Length: 156
Image (cartoon, rainbow, N blue to C red; front, side, top):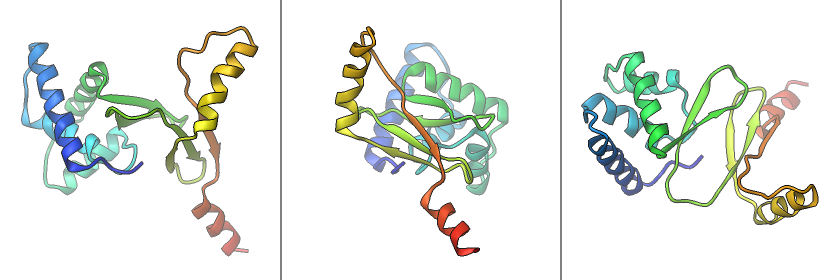
């Protein structure tokens, strides 16, 4: 996932602060740090990934605070939690952008986002063919990424 431009990340952070104030919740430095880490990440970080990134920056934020902040971010609609079958969730910012889908490497856990106009046009048609009214969807394709394939082929 390409990281958001710093201006877009800053806008999401301000929207998060406004959400907290509107819901009479404290706006704290720790919450800001967690939100910034998610908003500016170049991948889909897990709780452990967020804690590690903060620790590398010399910031101490407790695990419970990370979990609670992520819950509020998801409730606010600014972040989406994804379960890619790894036994934990990953998080991604939800700026005003087009829908996207995911390719998930079953070897290294890499998550690649993609958009495909043909797929977007086909999904409502497929749903209609089966008597469904399309409302929303999520496409996750599991396989092996190029880097893992090259590493395996190089080892032969």
